Image (cartoon, rainbow, N blue to C red; front, side, top):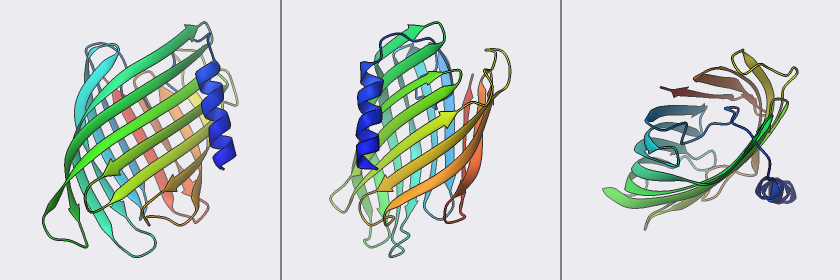
Length: 220
């Protein structure tokens, strides 16, 4: 799994000819646009984010993340403000690649301690897509004096047909995810069906443990 993650990261960084797309959930869509993203992983992770982009290369906003340990039942509820930055974008007809970075801070309620914990957040996302293939690698770190959790997510997708830019796109996606900090033991693998058209993007499926996994994104 780690070798596969490293290979996708290297490939995404080395690409140089790309074009706009929306197969991957992105924290920045377009200038003066608002992005709303949500994710539900039954029993493990729930997250809601809202970002506004004054310019095409950065956005500001916040979110709420709830983590529930599959190992010992501990939980975290983290509310944060965040700044997202488009580090690099490559465009060409038929393909696109992006490098995003972000940082922020907030507070967390921790099940094994009383009171709120100041928490900071940092992350990185690499993605590459054409109208037929897609790859994304995202790493998200949350730290406080009481915990440290990193969520690494790798997605690989294939489109059974080459969609038109104004049509309905369908993707078959395999997702691998690892959590640090005693949230989940091993790699959580999910198989997802993704559909998007214009500004609306949704996907749903199940993990190999039979748990529901669902995401959505809305741009306006």
